[in-house]
Image (cartoon, rainbow, N blue to C red; front, top):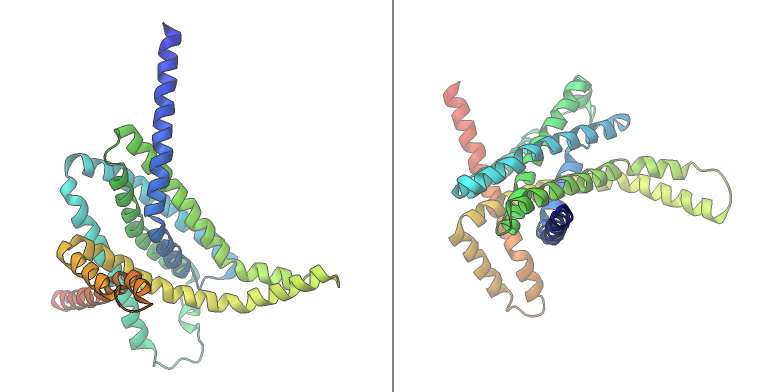
Length: 306
């Protein structure tokens, strides 16, 4: 009797694990786009830190990301069980926050770009380094919270029809794997220049060593351009993700964008390509507009309060 019960328990565990594996694979595919945005945003957020502090900062943000997901996973399960209607408004608020931060960054860059400065990094040098690091870490963790919420919400949509235990395990697996994947890649990106410097300083005259030195010099030269590129991509990703969340919450607007994409698809040879990118471009433009309105509203509220 005990043996039969044990076999039944093992069969149930095997079934749950099979379901978790299948659901995790499906959720990973659906959240791949958000993962790319998460990578670009967080690599850009931790840029500008002293080289010897880059990995500790990435580790601090990774721990903050795990704390975010430790809050979001139970919250998502509770919201899904008791107030499922609240998922979309909460996601839209998070999307608006991303658009607000993105436009505020653009506005700050535009209004400060013409200010004279004898030293490019004088503003950073004049700050207490610990305070600057803390500011970077807090900003990255806030951004991660919104993107993590979208990842958890997408995953919850995938597993909504499964048992409660499968939902819990799948959400936990996705949360941990996404965190390890994103911040492992972020750590690799921010230390790319150090790897290039190590290779460029290797001694020896063998063909392999010479090729390694050339490759190292290429990495060192490419690293600043990569980080600048990630800054641009990260800002665009804020508008694409935030605008995408907002338009998906406004069903009629999402349908309109899809109709425009279908019309574009009929255009000559580039039609399918343009149709593929049209919704993302429209989402980004809508995100810029939403961010501008949010910044104006916040500025007005600040003036009224002062």
